[in-house]
Amino acid sequence: MVGGVNAPKKLLCHSSIGRQLPQLLKGKDDLRQDAVMQQLFNVVNRLLDKDDLTSHRSLNIRTYKVVPLTYVLGFYSNL
Image (cartoon, rainbow, N blue to C red):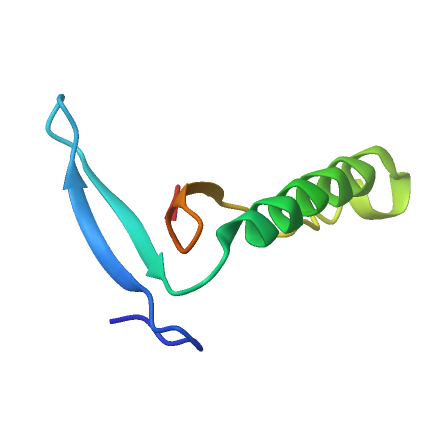
């Protein structure tokens, strides 16, 4: 179990090459909004990388891939 408002579940998926990949499964929430926020965080990270004052400090926001499966269910990957 992972903390949060809708209590997402943490899963370990096994890839075809034998790696374990952590995933979050989140239900009862519209993940399309989360996906848009992750896109915004990626833009902010690019801006931080381009600025001289922030690029040498390695400032960034940790982002995830969000895959909405249905209106109220989806995955977060690359934890």
